[in-house]
Image 1: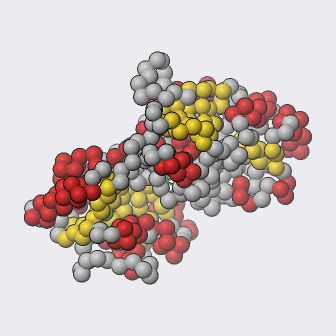
Image 2: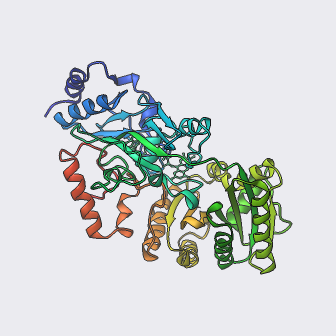
Image 3: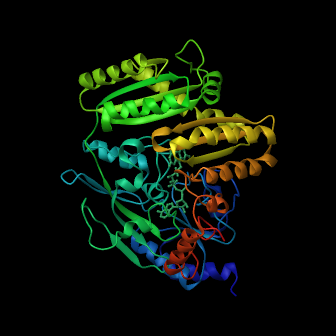
Amino acid sequence: MISNEQRIMALRQHLGNISLLTGKDIGEKYSVDFTGENRQIPLAVVRPKSTKEVSLVLKACSALAQRVVIQGGLTGLAGGATPKQDEIAISLERLSGIEEVDVDSMTLTAMAGTPLQTVQEAAANAGLLLPLDYGARGSCHIGGAIATNAGGNQVIRFGMTRNLVLGLEAVLADGTIISSMNKMLKNNSGYDLKHLFIGTEGTLGVVTRAVLRLFPPLPSRCTSLCAVETFSQSVALLREMQINLGTSMSAYEVMWAPYFERVVGHIDNLQSPFDKNFPLYVLIETEGTDQNSDTRRFENTLEHALDSNIIHDAVIAQSEKDRQDFWGIRDGVGEITKALMPYASLDVSMDIANMPKFLEEFDNKLKQLFSNAMNLVFGHLGDNNLHLFVTTHCQEDIDAIYDLGYDLTGKYGGAISAEHGVGALKRKYLHHSRTHEEIDLMSRMKKVLDPKEILNIGRVIPD
Ligand SMILES: Cc1cc2nc3c(=O)[nH]c(=O)nc-3n(C[C@H](O)[C@H](O)[C@H](O)COP(=O)(O)OP(=O)(O)OC[C@H]3O[C@@H](n4cnc5c(N)ncnc54)[C@H](O)[C@@H]3O)c2cc1C
């Protein structure tokens, strides 16, 4: 058994010039992800600049049986990148940069530590679109988005991050480099190995580079905020929009009244465009190539929905400011959550048909447990995804709220994580969504790819 000091000395010998921070040089930054939970300063921080350096680091850690945690932009919401005691953090922040934008093949090649926004801008500068976007764009890395298979605002049209990755390079726990930097849409030459590393949250390897699929830009945009009376009307409206507008629909966000009213009531510059309250509100956005014809089709579809009593009222954004105001209500969650602390945040998905039963049973049982509980809900309905923010303002109640929420998610056949991942915080609930055999297969895959158990241990897979 060697001491931590001896381990660091041995690492220094193996790593040569690779940046290694220890002691006071580490700083708070590497101690926790965006959740702020279970803060822990790592034993050391290694900051490789190339795939080769990542490989050297992992070879050395493997030889020393030294546990590591992989860190991207630390914006994760599942505690996956937060160090555990005596782990070394491998930060990808120096493995950053765009390698190529290939306009002819409509692909972009980037290193894993490149911030998402930098990748979006590089695509836009070449006249193309990377249709992956969410609030953490300025800080999260493209490697982190791939490792968590992030969702975001345009999933209904373009799918999750997985759908945008054509090729990938990753380093296994023993330092082996797996380079599958494919640019082709069609490639059935054996196993598609990139999927081992997409959405597996760094448990099977370190993503170091990726080839991403780009799309033509979509300059025309129509946005509307609609008021509906019932959940089934919001589903009917979704189908009406999908049938009439086809794949041009890029967002379908449903907000339940308690969430909507809390946001417009608590954020100074936001107000409801409607003169009365409704049980549900829907934010719809389409993107296309011709503003005039797209607007005509959008307005006709909404008019038809009004005439058929699917919606009760609707406002269409007439300017970019209107659009920002509508999105401000949907994105207002970021501003109201501070006042809700401590709160439980559930990111679940399920069949649309089960959503009303799930929400009703959750609210009833929640009220039985805590009469003062507040539950604010919105969801990317077209993606089957619900976000619940639940508070009693009491830290001791949080576990019971999660137990209830995930138990019911399992009962209704849903997923305990729709887009944020399992990380360290949700793995004890995984059995609600995955069978014993599925979890067993995950463990067996982990053992094959990480036999020395050094990579992101205690994340995703339950003990
Ligand atoms: C304001 C805000 C809004 C968000 N909105 C959304 C949203 O709409 N949809 C959504 O899906 N998510 C959202 N997220 C969470 C989202 O999962 C993360 O923002 C992002 O995808 C993680 O990237 P990161 O680089 O910060 O990774 P980190 O937080 O550093 O890490 C996340 C996990 O991935 C692993 N990891 C990181 N980089 C690598 C790598 N190169 N190779 C292997 N493993 C790696 C880590 O070990 C960890 O397990 C949001 C977060 C915030 C703070």
